[in-house]
Image (tube, rainbow, N blue to C red):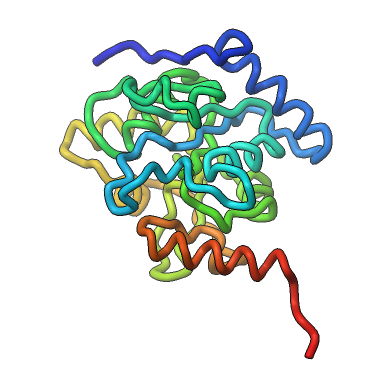
Length: 234
């Protein structure tokens, strides 16, 4: 296992530029959450999309930038979770990063790497491919956080199962995740099914819909474009 490592941005030590930018967003939103850092998962291979999902464009911004700015409006410090071979990729390189430091593959590696980087803090973990995620969804998650369990998450609006990639993971989850992975577990959703977690019913059925294929990306663009235009009058 390699040592956990945060990476500098172009503007200074790791986390400094992120925290500074976040402070402005928090000031306008008035919603800083003490003891919780943000981690945007952007270390996937995007195999079904056939292009980097983090770099997909919505309204003139990359998908990664959109969710990063969203998280900054609620948290004082936000990082991007990446693999070592993604450090120089331009979309990711402009943000403070945390490298995968745990053996294995999949989002569980990013979650565990964040928990190892700052062992005393909880993490609001967000997948980078959630174009419908809203301020309201994050605000409620932070407001209804239960630090006595291992995580606070939404239930899926589609199957009622936990949504681990828009969830607050508590420091106590680190050891349990390590044991789970050592026993062959790789799925954060299955982990939350088997371990203590607070699950919230979603207010918006689309908020946690992700985008994995070119067809889903086209559909998301159309939906967001119609939402931006607002209702039409006949």
